[in-house]
Image 1 (tube, chains in turn red, cyan):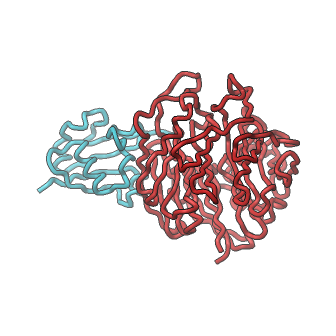
Image 2 (image 1 turned 180 degrees about the vertical axis):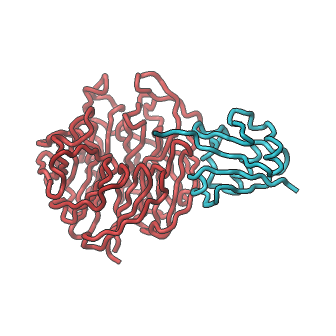
Length: 371
Length: 101
């Protein structure tokens, strides 16, 4: 059946929302893993029936679940994430050094080239790779050789939350860490470069232009232009046209350039989306109005998308992994809120409807386009 | 024959392991926290890392171990468990620490 499967992680379980290509009527299944925190779910583009889920709990730690039937049934796979060697220390909130400690998996990214390979971004920040469908995990530890003693946690912990795989080059991977910045490997993880030139963090870092330490909230890329990256930083919406070697600001006329997720239209590589949040101190939309902003010019010129979204008394947040697009002819876009709503648009953001309104706080939203 | 030990699991671990409230595991040799948990993880590999750290084998901080109306959380993992646990008369309970509002 042609349609979509929206994978929703929440503070109290996972939910799967399915619809046909019209994306008007929805079926909701869940909660899966009821009572557990589900930081992320993601399906494989090579085998859409394979979905990974990061299931965690303050009591029982980290588990990884895998489905091979599109989310109908699940099986726990490997949950041993052991840092290579002596993990060392990173900066703590007060600038002192603090030992590296594994807490949870924030993001799972199935390979675009091998159906058995999947990457995991974890807290405290590190990148792990599995080549056996999640049964065993090995750290790509060269990443932590890039000035990691200067990395520091953001409010959510020191998390590796974004993994972007280059569709044309299996050896090129981008990752982002709060608060360390963005990094790139061109050799499958053997060596890494910090790619933070052009970022400016005057309120967060003693050297506002430092190589590492920036609080990057999320990155996005369009598959047809893999050297162009978009970034929602703590403050500032940024763009790079040379694979992250240099960034420039494209916040333009946004009402606030603070926010968490950033997304790219499925068919228009210069159409991008953000959800402005008032500030780092007040994590809710400016003026109590939930507005997605769309730029059709790759940044700088933004329009508010409000049709179907609450325009008064709205004080939810939209977390960094909580926005995704589908690839149907009329591009669908989805985002989840800490108030438990998942909003969807089947017309590139022109109009919105709440698919569900009363889930637990949404931590992540991903979409599978089913053909 | 190895004694059969009854282990009581908290709600979320029952669901993860797809079991009922109580499972039975056979323990070879002395019946201690370590040997019981080794046997439990052997029978239910999905529980590895959820009760004890994978590497250090230390109890996760928000879990406790009760048996025979005693809190055994801070006993040595190699101390013998109470005789009623070793005989299968009483269960060894893995308990999630009380937390919440």
